[in-house]
Image 1 (cartoon, one colour):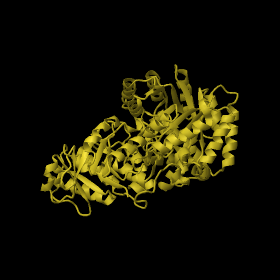
Image 2 (tube, rainbow over the protein chains, first blue to last red):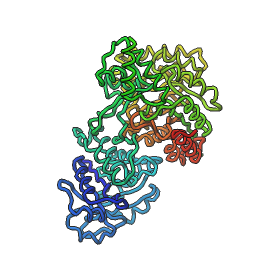
Image 3 (cartoon, each protein chain N blue to C red):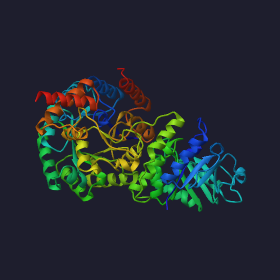
Image 4 (tube, each protein chain N blue to C red):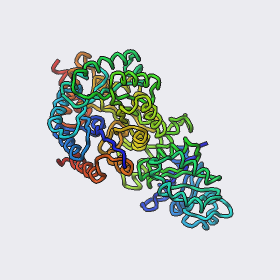
Length: 321
Length: 270
């Protein structure tokens, strides 16, 4: 079974965040079904209590402080020596696979996290994964970093190679694979939570944007606000016949809805949809002329046409007929 | 020595299909200038069949193309191809649907129709000086047997430019690699393979890298990764991520400079 540890709540220490925001986000992480939620010591102190239903990992600055935290059964600590209880996962940072000589120091450890390897796909990653599994006989979780914009793909390939445990963060915050990209990928590959939808994702995006004061881009995979806004006439036509033509998953799966916009790229299908959407009656033979008018207007204003502008154009048409 | 690879910039075509983006003619000419100055060798300038304004814009870009090659995009129909020919581009790229969802659900046709249309469209271009590039739309959800059949047909017709599109952005690096390796085996060394990635699952750069390692020569990118839905492979990110492996004919600094110029242009500067 593939297990996802989300480390978002250990990436927010430098932001001005309060315990309630962290608890709310943790609840949403529980809802979307991540297996473990990693929190930092600072986040834990702010949260005060851990929302029910979740399983939590505490990120420690020093491994020997594990004993002080009774609410946790799992811990993670960078470069930690293995402890007697075996409940501290040692995080090993590898900038690239050539640093594998450092494995020797940790061989025999029962629980390791490999963090880094952001340029792994430049080389023979299959062989690298085999080497990692050969070096560690116990628990290994992969935590790729996104320095080469490949973290989600590295995660995907780790899982394909037989890896079971991965570490991600929401929106890729902190420079990791994006939790939402990985959960959707696994859903589409039919290997994890195939029937589940994730309507919580827009709220999670808004919460994180509020905490960090950094908006995600409108076309951020899975959570971008505009990824289901369709403008191209060819795409609108295809989607209306069969959404799978141009949508890898329905917008409702990720808590979004589809929106058709009008511009110089629109086609007849786009016009028909807008007319239906706005409840505007127009004779079918007028639609080609209306399309030409929309394209002309869009070129004049150099942007999409708003619903109000479209309404005004259809009124002009109705009046002129 | 690094292997030479080539960027095909599709900011003016797929990039403009991004819902937030609409370029005036003046902006398109400026973008083309930025791309040419950056050393990008091929610019996918638009879809001539869209409207006459677009067609005229492509003609103007052709007048200023310098050393870049200008390609135009066509659906698999002869009317679209005729509009492309009118622009006198260097390359006509014809997008051929190869997945069943595109052939049967979107177009409501069948594989025989696709094959016949392919012959008709290529036939129109036989006497034309434009290079023909064929794109397999939704290649990674296609019936692989049909895809390879089309590949053989194209090879018999002497078409060597072939582009695979991950239309809904769901492929993974290993799958991508396997596809390109198989195509390379079938087409031999004459084939010039390209890849058009979408970023729906955040893997456009990774998949493009994988394709390039597996025999692909041409990578479609856009400025800032703009494009349909979650966009396409980001130009600067690809150069940064792969610069240690491939020779793009463009330095990372030049790529970043071009991106800065593009952002200035988008924000109202020229």
